[in-house]
Length: 276
Image (cartoon, rainbow, N blue to C red; front, side, top):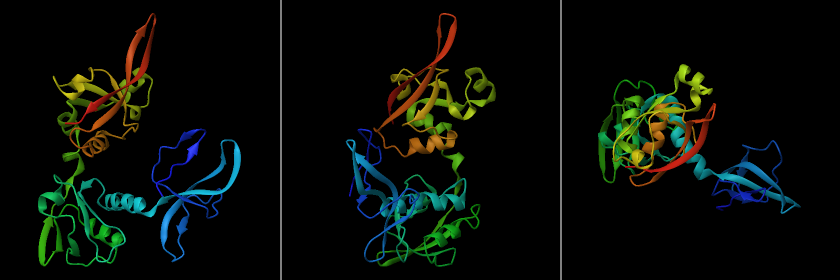
């Protein structure tokens, strides 16, 4: 457990893989790793063929099923509710389903759902499994979703009204967390910088005494990544920042337009901000 796969002398930046000597061949990526009880315990992703220049056999790596479950708890509900925010996860693979986590400021949190609540029904229907639960959430996202949950010895009835993600995950949230105003690059600016519109955000404002100001950010700088990732839009960037706790660090990758003699170039760099 908790293995990393070495690659050309450098550990791959994916922690907590399962290492197995079960045969895994090229093309098997995404296939199941199953224990002797027939239980799915991981998804095969990689094979190690040599160590320090010496050939090896039978060293494979798989993503633990607990991490897969965690990802499914995010991905599947999002697919059904699309651009609306629910804000709670259920534990995958349990019967009956139970709420595993709730974001405090989310619609689910404000409505009163709590971790540990056992889901008895959604809009009057008992979900058979996690996929069924996700479908029930997405049947009519513009209307309140009524939950019946068991909390200890008490049965509770909770109504959750989803909100559009962009109403919360937006430029204002980024400004509150970082003191930084950003906008999507747009076609005209992208042509000016010789970039694709999706390659960067442009800084349009920096609050005084904010984390962004302390890091030296200025109007006109380009943000090309958040912790090494480039979100597809401002909403996705705000969601990434919201996942950070107060006081945690966030690395911004930057590109700064500089003039060198007769040439104008984009010089890359990075800064670290403390989320507030």
